[in-house]
Image (cartoon, rainbow, N blue to C red):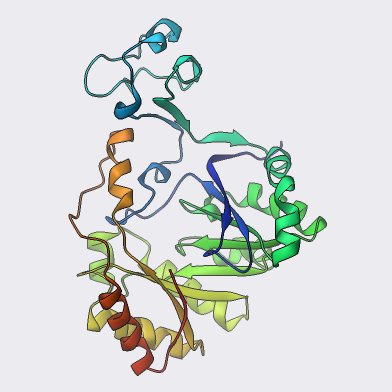
Length: 299
């Protein structure tokens, strides 16, 4: 059986997710529930119909197209309990107020969409970055797509939160040109409180990838009051030193993910944090440098 995966977005001309000009492939599904998640629409495995109220002209062509009586007249347009994700309402909406997030793709279908970008990859030393969500939740799909990319000399990178079976999927990881691995909360109690399960798996996988010389680079999102504490930076730096990694990518927090919560009726909390200031980012950078860790990239 041909593997498929729910792709919810393809973003082109990225300069911050690996070398060169890159196309980002976003896959749905994640094992963690980070309260600062920038893509809350990515967390669940199943597709969802999003509703952009500011675009809606109240034409209600969606209601005429829906055969499942799943159209609501209130503040949100879709009755998720009745929706069968057929997509008729999305096609019928004249103002693009409805969007199906997460459409099943085969590896070959995805490659057809990526091939037009190859000239940009070649000219810039770029490639494809798989992100999400957690792309390693779709190993059979990813395995096939990576093979197709390798056949056309396309550089591949994956961005992972680290919750996966290393022994089961190491052969797939070996095919990648680059792995971006996120380190978030390194205290197991804080991890459990804010992110959910997976702390030990993340820690073991971080150690295994580095010790077995996979092309891994580590990243940390700088979230005020969560990851930017002295204790957490100390713990992240200690892990990097243990695996002989002298650099880290720091990702500056922004609150754009909160704007997406309402379009899917998501349950993610609103932290009410302002976008990370350049001053606070510089302080985090200095904290790592004081511990002998180089800053690889500012994002």
